[in-house]
Length: 157
Image (cartoon, rainbow, N blue to C red; front, side, top):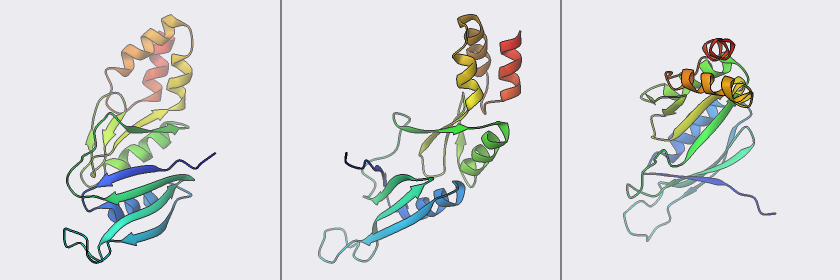
């Protein structure tokens, strides 16, 4: 089976974004960096064209393609967090230096990439009886960053 790589289109910040993400996620690294060659339109010769990187083993490529396309919530990356401490760590790291919070555990980092920071416990609670799932969903809808203790309290009510 061929390897599938997530490709993120940036205006000109692909290398900066890759360095940021590699600093956020453990077991991550930057790989090959390709530069624009001479002779292409746009006078970008020598600037970063693509940067390959891995986030905990998942392959990514950042492409500096210019301002033609931007990120939207139509594509997001879900972080399956083991506990509240992990939720807090990723939430704070991805919001650093200009990210923006959204509802129900969603955020956009400073590059505009959408992330869902989700505690594993939410999935467990939502997979239970429908009455419990309904209470948990209602509690989640009131949250910005997801709070495991409050989700569990809603399930117990």
